[in-house]
Amino acid sequence: MGSGYRLGEVLRQDKPRPPDEPPEERGRRQTAATPDKQLLESGPDVGRLEGTTQSRHPQGGPLSPLLSNIVLDELDRELENRGHKFCRYADDCNIYVRSEEAGKRVLASLTNFIEKKLKLRVNRDKSGVRHCTKVKFLGYTLLAGGGIRVADKSNESLKDKIRQICKRNRGVKFEQLIEELNQIIVGWTAYFRKANSWLSDYRQIDGWLRRNSDATD
Image 1 (tube, one colour):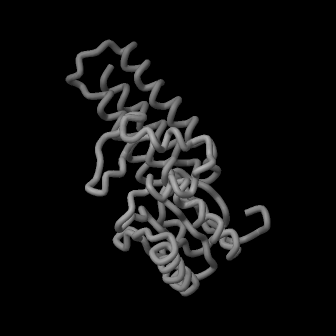
Image 2 (image 1 turned 45 degrees about the vertical axis):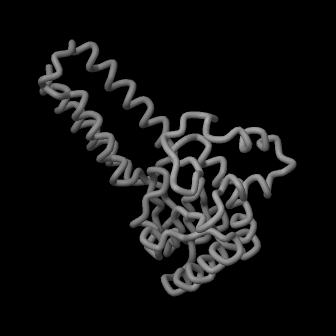
């Protein structure tokens, strides 16, 4: 961004899945000398895991991002060696290229790398080439000029939470309602403090919030 690289099409590689080997097994092989070895070997009792898959690797808990970061570290190095602009969190990776055609080439090449070299499976239903303005990543949407805005789904999620709090039939005191709203709003604004575009969304949500809270008074 600082070098003036203009964001164009975004290649989304989502949720690589192991065909045969659970990611904790690959993680053990890749991190034999890391401080996290004990954590990896402690099995599904570590943290709060919400379930397991048939391949026995935990999903939905704090261990999953850790294992993804370990397993996909090799992918990060490959992307850096190729000179790609990318951003990855756990198994969700966005790669930024200059055109749709370039995105298709990179998608094919990296799918081959992930499945042949890393022995993982790419979720083709969720992977593809899309313009950056059409992609949500960690609740944000990046704009072609380098701006950052809150994604539409994130705004709708906030409104849904406010609707639940402001239900007329809840029967709570107005003071409690304000306290609950403040907890949601403070956390939401702290998380999305990096947004620097489409700030009018904040004013619209503020007005919408005032109307909804007044209706419950």
